[in-house]
Length: 80
Image 1 (cartoon, rainbow, N blue to C red):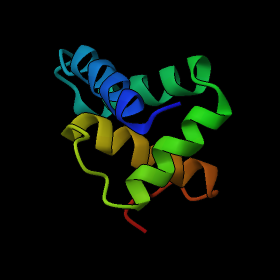
Image 2: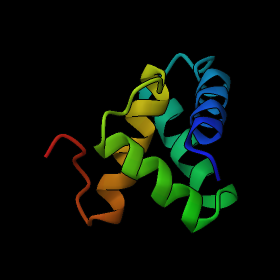
Image 3: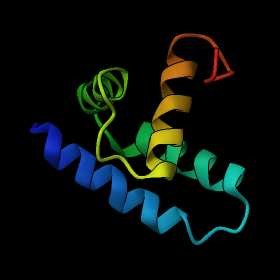
């Protein structure tokens, strides 16, 4: 799948969850959505994009993909 399409989809999901006033809950909701509805290959590609330049991901999508990457690496703190 084209990375530009994945970024657009991630941003759309981020925009949906941005309506939650609790940022941590919004990130958790988006991570859950990505785990449930995105194929492993799609998740892998968006994480690769994040580890590259991460360009064009909105703030919430960026945070959620970072959290997803941290969980896949067995690290619950995405800043480490």
